[in-house]
Length: 91
Image (cartoon, rainbow, N blue to C red; front, side, top):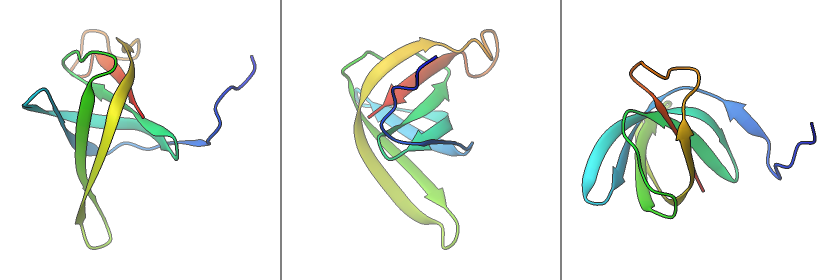
């Protein structure tokens, strides 16, 4: 299989707050890279939807805010009946 990604992805899990359409929800990162991030969450979004992702990371726990666009949404095959049944790519 040929890798088509321009940027390296890093598998890392931490909680984020995702805001879209005036509604905030919790999500978890699945992987991140310079070109975007893959999140898992409990509800669906729409491709093309604008989102705001807020999180804190050590050291210092400074709040970080990223603005992006949903580029892909799909069922999470790793957790189809669990807490995080959807996967969302944000660029």
